[in-house]
Structure formats: structure tokens, C-alpha cells
Image 1 (tube, rainbow, N blue to C red):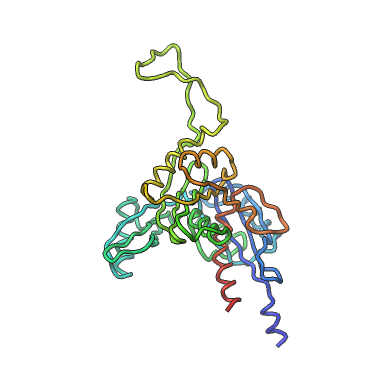
Image 2 (cartoon, rainbow, N blue to C red):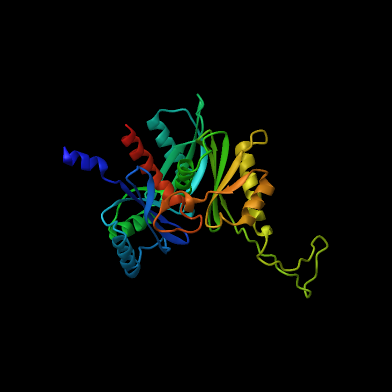
Length: 335
């Protein structure tokens, strides 16, 4: 009976590794004696090149950090930067599950122009399904990218148990750790360098997804007085990288994405921004002004308390991946 009590009181620990474009982030969470989730460990390492294995020195540092945090041998969830994925929505006829999977795979191969022997292909449903059609979100990612990421985690002493698109993981984190995302239309803009992913939820269900790629801080070249000026052009003076204007291109792309997903009659009641520049007030104000919607940062650094402080709004993907375990463990304990 004593052993049975110890099993019930044993704390659950779960780990995630986010292979981002700017850094590798590892975070571990556990339940305290009250059942609340707290950060047990969090650290960052330099980013890994996705097209090659992690170098020996980097692997050694990874192992040392994992051991120092007391995480050696733990299962972990892996998230990979969205730029490594092809992602596109598709509408297919209503079919059986088996036929739908085969059709979705064929559609992804055709749309992405990929070699099926070199990529992993997956799909997920979008919104409410009609009687005659199925709306799907198609994914593909090179298997080599998955192998490099998971092998790095294995060599560091962890046991990968899942691989996920970083923006989709961030969305799950927002749903789990942030209130008010299960009613009405809510948009999530997940930022990763020059890649952004716009996800729209309707009453807690994923309704649409769109990748936005570009150079958000567009540079304006000064006019050259030695070159003739065309009649339909106006010479512009160089503009510095300060101010809200540098986010206008992203905001306009986001507005186009929202119009495609929501139309003009149904508009999001809020937009949540996660990722590297999500705490930039200029970004939030520009999105609010262009898109006409309330905009806020995901605030992933504040989702959980812990002994180690974490800074910036860059932890949404890792914590989102862990929210799957937090939800399932919480359900088991409640049962």
C-alpha cells in the first residue's frame, strides 16, 4: 500500500525540444505537489543547420545541458521550424478514412512537387466537414530534416516520441495556456524570422492555415542622381529600420490571409502573435491598424512559473508541444 501511495504522488515530467530558426530551445515541465505545472528546466543552444547532422562539439554541449538539467533518459516531443514544411489547404470529396488518406497523399505529392520517398506527408481536417467534401491541411517535410533533429535529441540522451510543425504546436499552446481562444473566431500569427504562419480558429477548431513568406523590413534604396528618373516614379530618401512602417508588408499579407479565410462578414474577435518579435509594440500596433482587430502577444514566457526565468515570446512552440502531455496527464489524474 505504501508503494501504491508513492506511485500516485510521483511528479510527472515532460520535455520538448524546439528546433527553431534562431536557436534550439529545450524546456521541461513537471507537476508540483498541488498538481500545478511549473518549469523544471529551460535552456537554449545555437541553431542547427537542418540539412546536415549536428556537429560533435554542439552534440557534446547538448548532452551536457541535458545531463545538467537532470533530463537524461526522458521522453521528449520535437518541434521543427515551419520553414522546413510545405503546407497548403485542399478540398477533397467525402471518402472513407483509408481512401481519404491515400487521396490526400497523392494531392500533396502533386501540389508540392516532392519525391514521396524523400518526404513525410501528413494531413489534418479543417473546420466542420460537409456531407460531400472534406477540407484538409496538407503537410510535407523532408525525412532528412526529421532524422537530423531526432538523432541530435537521441545523442543528447533524450527519447523523441513525436515531431510537430512549430506553428501548430504554438497554436495548441495558446489554446491550452491562454484563456478565451475557444469562442468565436481567433487568429494566431506565429513568427519565425522571414516566415510567418497565419492560423484561424472557429470555436476552438482549426479553420484555415496559410504560410506567409517575405522580407518584412523592406529596404528602400535612395535615388541615384546619375540615373534618369522615369515619369511614373518618385525618388525616395533612404528610411531607417525604426518605426511601425517596417511591419507594413507583413500586416498587408496578414490582412489578405484573413480575407481569404474569413471573408468580409465574419472577422476575428482577436489576434494572438507568438514568436521572436511578438513583444514588439510596433508590430502589434501595425497589425491592429491594418487588420482592424484587437492584437496581443501570446506571452509564452508567462504561461508557467518556474525557478529559471525565460525571456521573450519564443517558447510557445515548445510549451505547446508539452501541453498535449499536460492535458492527458491532467485528464488521467482527474479520472
